[in-house]
Image (tube, rainbow, N blue to C red):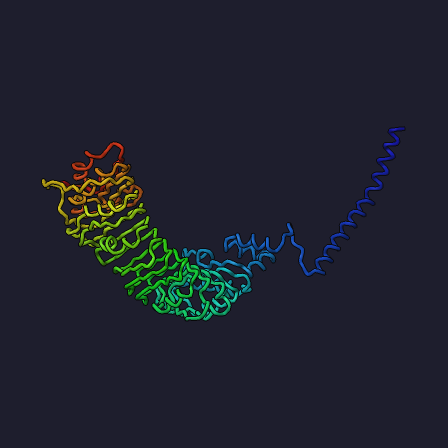
Length: 516
């Protein structure tokens, strides 16, 4: 009976299954139709996969690289809407996949401009915060394109704008400053321009939120720059490079937040007057020495002074400039030559920890310069930890210590308690340079590493380089041998055991060091 009962139960279940399946299928179809009716009434389209909020999709899209974001927009309606409201656009040959391999440069430039034009004209003009136009590979860009692209960005309330045009061509494009007064003057915070004419006017509040200003190969006058700076109370960084109309840069005291100031290769620049109280990094470089005056330079921590043609930069920095930047911690000095030895002065640099000095002589450093006078910096810097001295010359005119039987000079003893690393590149057999080295060894109890490179740092052996090392003139090879002989004779014997001595010279495989 139990077996018959189970058999009848299985038969009833089989007869009931098709009917139940039809009911389940009908319910599922009805549910899907009801969902479609709901979508049709709301105007939205059903999304496959996860149904996430719109802002989540936009955030995901914003994290994609530009090329992947564009490809996603081609296959997804959701990402297409996000693409038309893209917040950050970096448009260059690299981001657009135009590497130029096997492509004519003019053809690549036309392709780049065409792609940029299509992207910007299809942008909705909503939500754009950053636009970077890297068109440096285009020899010339039709101004009509720039005049049509920039209004799209400014209407969107852009905050960061970078427009890099070719540095080969002259600055011809007049940047439309009037766009800055069309509602975006309250949002522009980062402006980087190159190879254009920039004529800011004295409009109220036009730069009051600007934080960073980068100008490269830009035509702007002294008065225009001063007008711009006087309205930029929130400015934190100012970069001027090859701005050849500027003669005098005046930094007003209103720039309380300005911490970085750099001016380089501005051909006509003669003077920089800064009254900004909180500049921590100051860089100046060019062909000529520029008059520098600080009204509030106590906060300068990092300073770089470079000059390509005018000599005595080391002397000027030590005597005229350093007394006004007593709190400097990192100092780079580069001079084309020195005619005057560095004097010893009472001023102290109690915070200087890193000192890098480069002497770049066209042929030879003037024999009138006494290398031993650099002790002036060491004595004035009790916290100095690293000293790097680079001499670049192709002819040594100083008196060589090789064969000289006169006594070596010794300065009064002074203990450099914190100096740990000393590097001399371009070490030669000049008597005053050896005297400087000996002074450091004998007066630096904290010294850990001494590196002496007689090959100017560029003639070392390179196994992987085709053709071997760079060629060296015969007289340079002979001087390198004299420098090595001076090290063996006067330096190696007095090196304490705690100090690691590193000596390098020309490659013995590629350069035969001839003896006198």
